[in-house]
Length: 468
Image 1 (cartoon, rainbow, N blue to C red):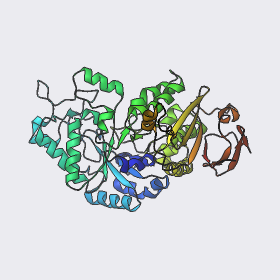
Image 2: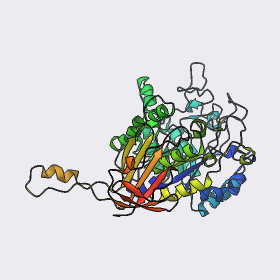
Image 3: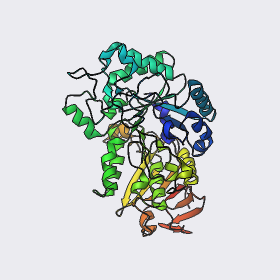
Image 4: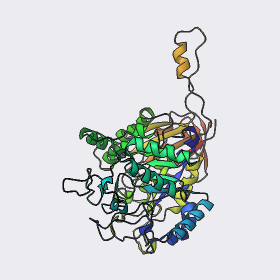
């Protein structure tokens, strides 16, 4: 991992596109036509879900899963040609955005073309059938990474795609041997290429269950030897428990805070509220006001944001991975046009420095206050005092940016106007000026009271501008 040089990834926005379901046309041209809208959201990186042909053997649904790849080095002809993809990539780069391509190396379609010459490159059962050892993935077969020629084939494929894209989002990255990722990264760097690596890391209980069965599975900490960004599935159970009202909010917030002690100091976790594997947030969180609070909270956290296409319209339906199920916004009635709100959130996200201290406070049953600012400075004791050596070790370098931010969020599951008085959330803060980053209104905080109290519309995100 090129650590310090990539910390600016923490305030980026990654937009996920499933080309096959992107409008009714479902091709590269349809994405090209929407680039300006996508860029307007503040998008920095576009992640394409797999664009290769899907397998036919044991196919699920009418079109098959994009994660059951038949040819790693081809494009699904229904999406367009290599010339079309090249034109799209060029336009994305001209807009100042980077491109990630889904990398699916844990498994492939059982009729992948490489198996015609190398049938031993997948795990096979006693009947000689390629199969998946994990989960309900009956349409794929696990790759056998003990084969050195398979490793070279896959690395050559990565090298090929880097002629078009800037990096890879790697599917179930923990299940692919860590030494392969290290080998691939070293080989690509030797070719003068330094890809951006995003790992779909998995839940901790999944890692443990596989290790209990004798699998070699990398931990999130180990993946940071290669990957620049990882999913936040390590805290997914706590988030899910709050969404399902099975545990208090403080458990999830504490899990977020605990990441600062669990991973390397410069770790980067991608923040998401929905994706192609999970329900739409709008299916669980009801009402425009509630959705805005949840998304603003997600943007305020430390780490890049993952947006799944259609999120900016508050869509409730999660498109199928196995059949034609296009996102046709003009035909969807149950939607909220939240693009202006996401555009504002994008501008706020880009203002956050890459290294800041976050202080989380849960108030009541559903309210969260977060302070972002310079990390606390622990002064050295005078020479000769007891504890001098320990104090010197604990002395942290100052933050490169002293800007401070305050966020107040109502993480109810539906729009609820009954909120505590602002004084209950601000009473312990020093006097300062507050400028709302959502509507540019300025206030003064004096004695825990907000002079010129704003309307009760939440979320509230402020830049703290010094003493009042």
